[in-house]
Image (tube, rainbow, N blue to C red):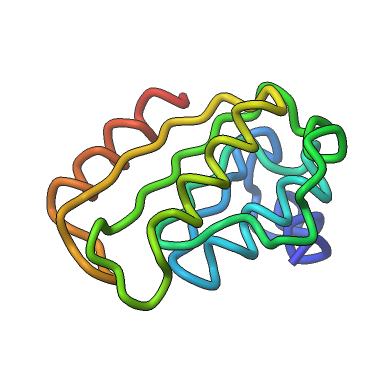
Length: 127
């Protein structure tokens, strides 16, 4: 993914300073990990019904993405990925100095209309 994002600006005339990641479930995990690994490449991350992989459990290591905006949304009734994992990730990222927005929704392992609206508003605020 890092190589794809590196090539985006020259291949598709994309402003490199506006690239963000949006992921659901495993995609949320990949997006959060990518942000921690290469914070200079991404402006923000939206992570829905997922969490930061356990290998990123050191707040000092995560702090290299300090200040980066992250939206984490979880379904309160998610029986695939327990909502506590998203909450714990939000707490760790917040402790490490990232700009975290954490929301819960009364759904399972899916997006609700309310969540879609919240994410849309949050993304608008990032520009």
